[in-house]
Amino acid sequence: MKLDDIKKLQQKKYRAELGHFLVEGEHLLLELQKAALHNPQLQSSHVYVTSAYEDWQSPFDTQLISDRQMAQIADTKTPQGIVAVVPMPAATTPSASVAGERAIYLHEIQDPGNLGTILRTLAWFGSFRCLLSPGSVDPYNPKVVRSSMGAIFHAPLELDVELGSLPARFPRIACLDMQGEPVQSASFKNFDCYLFGNEARGVPREQLIALAAQPFTIAGSGAIESLNLASTVNMCAYELNR
Image 1 (tube, rainbow, N blue to C red):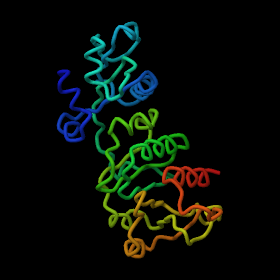
Image 2: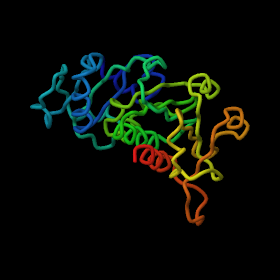
Image 3: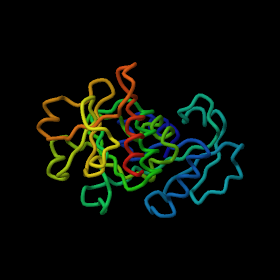
């Protein structure tokens, strides 16, 4: 791939058009190498390095470029000097789900840092898949990829999952709400899908009613109005694995 095309991968429309995304930095490259051992599709990744990483041991095709060229293709202001162009994974289908796996559904989530942090948590605990609604932030956005710290390679993802499709797949759906049972309740673990809404708007009330979603809450002091979305998902994932 030409360097001019690699630079375009910072934009969603070109990631979709070219079928690749960017992975930047030493830690993420190590995670990519680890994931490629079990995922043949990732093995066709291509790595670009500056002289600082000229001796980098990589199973991928590797090309040496100048610092100026690296600055052109990297997303960060002060790049480390190592970037990989990674093929976009094949879409994860509902049939690919495994027994005992819980679904975390994110409705129109917008913040790249939130999504990356959530993916990191789900990959840490395992036995979760992440379902993203239409209108959500692109998980292959460079900021999501960086904040996931490599979890993008390990947490099963489904994109553009319509909210209305959930009942056909998941008989028991839970949601987070200010009014509901505590997440510490034993019943919190009895659901197949856990629904979380947009950072500012949540999920429309009428849609929650149509889904017959069971509300649960994380009790707080009441001093502030709400929790950060990623923090909410993190605490719920912990409770589900406690």
